[in-house]
Image (cartoon, rainbow, N blue to C red; front, side, top):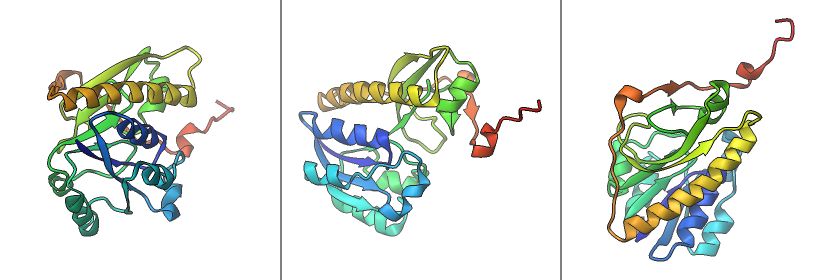
Amino acid sequence: MKALVVGAVEGTRVAVETVANTPGWELAGVLTLPGELASRHSDFVDLAPLAKAAGAQLLPFANSNSPEALEAIRALAPDFTFVVGWSQICGPEFRAACGGNVVGYHPAPLPRLRGRAAIPWTILLDEKITASTLFWIDDGVDSGELLAQSYIHVSPRETAQTLYDKHMVALEKILGQALGMIASGEVVREVQDEACATYATKRTPEDGRIDWSR
């Protein structure tokens, strides 16, 4: 199985290493941001060394939906694409260029907390349990069929960093399991329950400011 991994953060690193080390899989390419755009992500990771070590083609693109990026993806012809840590919409043309098999990652128990900033919202909403989720990307926002989930307890003293770290461990686990299932011909597609869907909005540094006079 030939895989393309798309992203530019710590979770992408986990995905790249997991795919590269899973029997039956070839890491064919890594689509990521050029280094000069590293400031787009607070947890940006330079994936060039990992791609080189795995013998994968590095595809640095500012816009994954650009004609140039789509042409490079078509030339790579991946069997499956894994989008982990990528803030751009994976449009219909992108998914078609990937052959239709595009799996996304979201650090929340979908269908709950679709959208942005799921980790801080998990803490702010006092969620007791969360999950790392792999899902099939569709035209909606984190609304595609579920591939795999791993549930996580949220401790009373949880911080964004400690919860992030827990998600990285869970991501490695469920991605490894999913890769094995896909390679064996077992593909899970569980429809999300729309009645349970909630949405999280974008957060900015200003949202985290504390007014001590209040």
